[in-house]
Image (cartoon, rainbow, N blue to C red; front, side, top):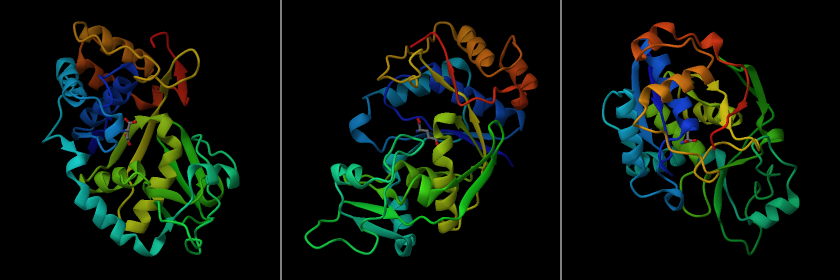
Length: 288
Ligand code: GLU
């Protein structure tokens, strides 16, 4: 049984970039006669916007993107993340490096723009240093997967990412950990999301192996970016979806996804053809 999901971060109202991920994931699930779940990724308290979760849900409803079962809120699932960390205990270590120290000793910049951590604290915290973040030890074994839209992918985590954080210095569980625990907990078989997360996938598969979870299929749709190449977001001034014109929003999103035009969602499901999704990581659009 196909189980898909949409996992927005409630940092603002739904905009075109997040609608692309939502619609692609919804159509893929409905075309497979599967279930489609919604999960609010509300762990990063400082980035949240009051009321954004309800706004997002209201917009999905207005557009006809109905979900199955109750909405899951990550902020209510801390105990599961804690037990996952406990399970990972032999694979993690405390790191006392500050941001500044990491950029001074970094092995370079990873594909997602973060510093590549050289493993300074792997052998134990240096004397006089306080524990800040918990990192998972990586290795040189390539992690590979076939993305349904972007094709074959491979990453050598130790070289390309470095030992990565699963529990942050500010006391929050890291996205990489929470997403893996939740995808497993919700029985997700198919992750459909924006290609800005393509480079996170190897880390997630690595954690799935360490935790004994199965790996879902992945389909990364092009991320919508503005003319400057920035991902649409509240920070880059993306406009909220106009819920007064649901047909227009769906039409534009289908076009972005390379799909045939459809009079309604029923027809969009019938027409859904993932092989028509552009094999690109990002596409610039005018909005935002
Ligand atoms: N919450 C993430 C975001 O809004 C998406 C996580 C995911 O789909 O894995 O960018």
